[in-house]
Structures are given as structure tokens and as C-alpha cells.
Image (cartoon, rainbow, N blue to C red; front, side, top):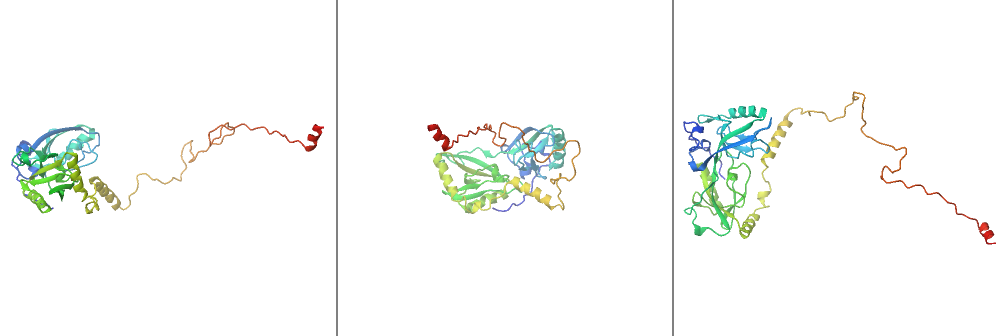
Length: 330
């Protein structure tokens, strides 16, 4: 795919919160009203809990979600934050990330409720017969018009493979532009009305995302069991090959590796509490041994087997000499 090429943002002189119904400034250009939803989310924050979102400093767009966080179940990747508990996070057309961080820190210190107003670009548009006539729609498949946005410098993440005269989505990774609108196994029939059928045509999608803030994709999804089997067979030709040799790490694994790497760079990373045995005698009148053992003086059970001990059988001497036996016969 082509590399990301920065585009000049056409921000309005008005503040974003006053013009949010007609513009989505973080996406670079003016978007139609029917492509933007204003959403109000609310979630409870426990004291000291993080919000769980990573924001772009320049446009307040959510570029990453953590595994644990107060707002990860309400906020989605690609959302644009506008207000927090009634306080605007924008100063004119410029984002104010520091204000969001300071406001949330105060709320999280006491465990208050967060109310966030955000912009959420729609992922699916109505599909009319002009884009795809009814006689071209096959039985056992569903069709939709997905919208692919270019979100800052996030990777496109669209891996396509040919099969059955179509281009199928092979893998979808978290926090990529394609993850918002497509799924694994989707077939892309066209991009902005231009037919897509070969690997050479796939470059058109990357080129269009550099020129426009969004691209509409005509998606075909298998619904019937026979159709799903056909798609699965087409994808299995690529599964397990070079695409699976070096799969990308999950985002949370990357975060953990970064934290551990920074910790190891320190000269002497000492643990908070020593795990070695202390030589000093314990203080106080009570001391404990490392190992405990018990010896029974008198017991009716075997301590190891936990079964009753049978009583000893008396020994009876039945031995008689041959002389005594002969004497008894006489």
C-alpha cells in the first residue's frame, strides 16, 4: 500500500463545537451531514482509573484503545472528542489535549461520572440500486456501502487477496483505518464506483485515500452456508503461507514490551520488596518455624494412611511333640 501523505486541513474559523454538524475538522475536509453522528456517552470512573483512550494531540481523534479503561466500552476508535462534562476540548479550531487530561485527572481522583460529547463518522451508508442494480445481486450474499476514512497517520491495514474473480479481505488488525468498516472475508467490488477485481486494482484504494478524506467501498458478504464455504476455501489458499509466518504483534503486547524495555534501561531496577530470606531474628514473643511436623504419642490411627490400626492378634502355641501324640493314642 502507498505511504501516508499528509493533506492540508481546511479548518473553519468557527469553533468545532459550534460547527460540528457540518464539519469534522480532524478528518481534513468538510464531510456531509449524513456522514457524521453526534454521540453522547456516559461512564463511571473508579478512583484512579484511566480513561483507556489514546488521543491525537492535533485533532482529538481516538487512535488507540487500551484493554482496561473506564471509557473503552463507550468510545470507539476514530471518534473525535468535543466536550467533557460540558467543557469544550477545543479552542476555536485547535484541539486542547492538555485540558482533557487535566479535567479527567480531577474527575478520576474522586471517581465521578464522565459525560463526553463526540463525533462519530458513520461506517455504512445506504446502498441504492444506482450503485449496484438488483439484477447484479446474487442470492446468498448481502451487500453494503462501507466508508473507509483516513484517520491521521494510522495505517490503512487493508490486506487483499484475489479469488473467485474478487478481492477478499484477508486480515484485519486493530486500530487501523480498515478495521472500522470491513471484516475478514469481505469482498470489495468497487471503490468510489471504480471496479476492483485484481491485485493491480487494489492500489486504487490506497491512492484514493490519499486524495480524499474518505472512500466508499461496495462490500459483498457471504450469508449462506455454501457461499461461506466458497469464501473460506478462497482464503485458506493464503492462510498458513507467508502471511502467517510473521504476524504483527497485538497492540497490548507492544505496550507491555515498551514498558519493560524502559524499565530494563534503568541502571539498577531494584524490586520494591526483597525476596531474599532475612538474617535477623523476628521480633516479638511468637516465632514460627518454616516447616511444621507432628508426632503422635498414642494414636488409634495411622497418621500417614489415616486408617484404623488393627489390634494385635494373640499368638497361640499349638506345637505338640511326637511323644505326647503317641502317649495320647495309648
